[in-house]
Amino acid sequence: MDFTGKVALVTGGANGIGRATALAFAGRGAKVVVVDRDSAAGEGTAGGIRQQGGEARFVTADVTKAADVQAYVKSTLDAFGRIDCFFNNAGIEGRVQPTAEYDEAMFDAVMGVNVKGVFLGLRHVLPVMLAQKAGTIVNTASVAGLVGTPGMPAYVASKHAVIGLTKTVSGEVAKHGIRVNAVCPGPVDTRMIHALEAQLRPDDPAAASERYQASIPSGRYTTPEEIANVVLFLSSDLSGNVTGAQWVIDGGRTATGGAATQAMQK
Ligand SMILES: NC(=O)c1ccc[n+]([C@@H]2O[C@H](COP(=O)([O-])OP(=O)(O)OC[C@H]3O[C@@H](n4cnc5c(N)ncnc54)[C@H](O)[C@@H]3O)[C@@H](O)[C@H]2O)c1
Image (cartoon, rainbow, N blue to C red):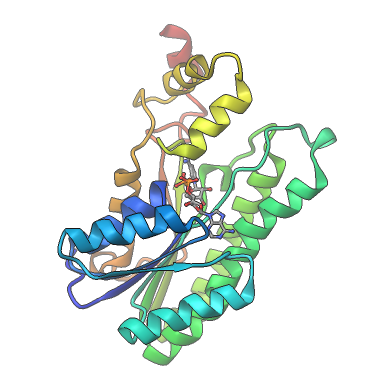
């Protein structure tokens, strides 16, 4: 997994999984462009990479806006001349609310970032990779793209859509030397999971965290670095003919239906 001389573009790279992946790409030699709407944290990721002797730029962008997406693609080409690895990762969780009560504006917001943002990234990065006749793309879906989660209709619909986009695009570009895969994380130790804990148990988020982690066969949340490792593998030559695939990283939770028996024995 040597990315020396490669250019990696990471959306949602200011925090969480995107930040860990940007650092991991840089640690293995890639030049990195970090994209996010959170400018302070995004500059922090790029600055951290430069402090460790790597090359990185930060571009402020809202991934739901076509002009911003075109601008982050242009900035990457202006800085480094190509895009080898695209991690199409920015996302939001929305509210925990049953479908019968779900706020319409929140539904639009979640679909805007998680589906339109991912689509726009594909729409504007793919022409660059088609011209290069090479490239890898990893979209961040979720185990919520594979199974339902009561109380999260927008998020679940959006992540199922990311898997649909991944499968469709992979077939369109496979003959052009471009591979497109999805990662499907279960709960990962980032701001997002802690925000969900607070929504589910505002009185006692720590109790929600403990119960949730107990329902995972491995007994813990996944770390952002563990997701980054899979993203790097899917972006490397080691995954040569892997395309259109969805990679579950969830400590065994989805495979075992939430492992209710283990949760009850704790
Ligand atoms: N944390 C989890 O448990 C978990 C599980 C499965 C999937 N995911 C997915 O992983 C991805 C990363 O999430 P995370 O856990 O690192 O959360 P996070 O909130 O720490 O990071 C998400 C990043 O995306 C950025 N972002 C959000 N909307 C944006 C927009 N419109 N334009 C530009 N940037 C925007 C945020 O500023 C933030 O830096 C998301 O797609 C999320 O749905 C997370």
